[in-house]
Image 1 (tube, rainbow, N blue to C red):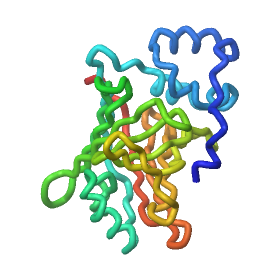
Image 2: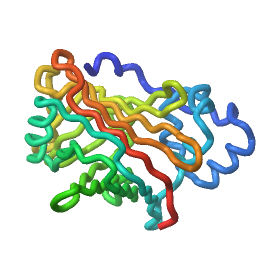
Image 3: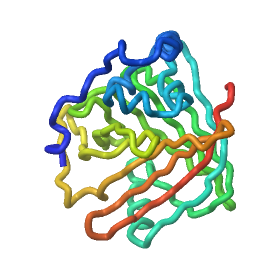
Amino acid sequence: MLGAVSEPHRKWDIASEPAEDERLEGELGDLRFRALIPARDWASLPRPVRLRFSKRLAGGRTMVYVGEVAETRLTMAGHLLAQAARLIGSPFPTSTDSGVPSVVSVTEDLATGGQIWTRLYARRAGFPQVIHSSKRFCGPTGLEEHVGSGVGMALTLSVEAGALVFRSAGYFVDLLRQRLWLPDALTPGVLSVTHMECGDGRFSFTLDVTHPRLGLLIYQRALFREIEP
């Protein structure tokens, strides 16, 4: 799986963007996401998406998104995967409730300089599910996501149909300062998270996990809007 992403990621050509966006994003200060995709693709994204992924979170700043889960689907295999993943921090949705509140916060990862994403999903019964992960700007693709217990994945970043897409490009386990890359047979398949602008200040996060033989295992779509913390 890693062979498809071994080519170094392209760096951003600052001179290629309009002056206004260059000034605004320069003030916001975090150009690391836009450095991972070609300039033409970044420029094709809706402006709110570009600004959302250019905000500097240093100094205790937090981004907060509020909304609701629109839909969650789990196959039997997806349900088993979500339950087994509780051992590493429960990174997948374990409930199929829809129309329930959700809150996402993003803060700086003080240990690595990356970002901590905390997702809260309410349930119709019982306590909410809380998912933590850390995005770090390193590794063979320039971006990794760590979910706990040393487990993580390399991510590629692309623009598809006007949306920003994060896609897994290999899973690993960090153990005793050594990194073990998992063979495809021991992974759940390809994980994708799609960030799409919906208009009227709203945007969607869509998660899907697709196994090469079992097909779509997990699908979740949630709608959010950004608020001032």
